[in-house]
Image 1 (cartoon, rainbow, N blue to C red):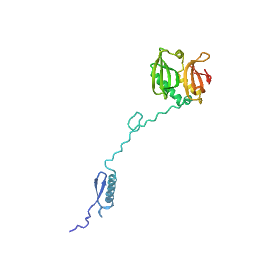
Image 2 (cartoon, rainbow, N blue to C red):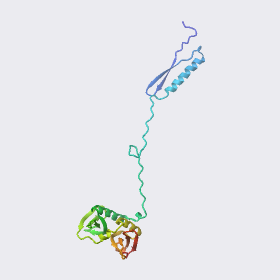
Image 3 (cartoon, rainbow, N blue to C red):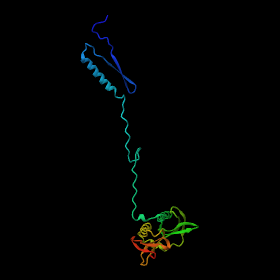
Amino acid sequence: MAVVGSDTRKPAVRYLALSGASVVLVGSMIGCSGGGSTGGEASSSEASSSAATASQPANQTTPAQTPSASMDGSPGASPTPASTPSSTASASAVNGQTSAVLTAITTAESGVRGGEVFDVEDETERGQRVWSVKVATSDDRQFNLSISQDGSSIVANDEDATPDDDIDKLRSAEITVSDAITAAAEEAKGQGDLSSLEIDTDDSGTVVWQVEFGGDSGTTVLVDAASGDIVDVGPDAG
């Protein structure tokens, strides 16, 4: 026999799915007709709060941050490329052939311990173009080397039994042969490729680097071996 005024309705059941396959059972009791609006509103408020909490993903983690790039070679680093030095006005006058001579000088001096180049000529030996280079040592010995045309390798290296007198002039030089070539190339731009150089004296007796461009039909530049100043320029210089 039913009791008058009792609530025979069953509580509604809601299932809220959470990430990670978790399920929260929220019981929301529907207010009885005699329970008043207050009880129903409270139950509704609790259900809303539970639903808001359930909407947050379970076991949520903060994504790992990618390590910032560093300049010490650590993983992920992106070093800034080193800047290339700008060319000077003098270097701009050094063309391919002149550059090969400078390389040949470095190669020759590396092949003779304590050696200094004092004479270079563009020659052909056994059908092969080479740089004929004379190198003096600190004890006045002389070595004659043949260097490949690109300046990168030694083809021959022989000691000269009778050293040139020009070795004495080399002792008073303050300007290196490479610096003299660079200065002469700037002065002789457009006059042809470097064909020879030697240390010598001009008509006044000044020790000079004599640098020739364009062969017999070109021009010669005299560079003071002590100061680096240009002494004379022209076909008949020297």
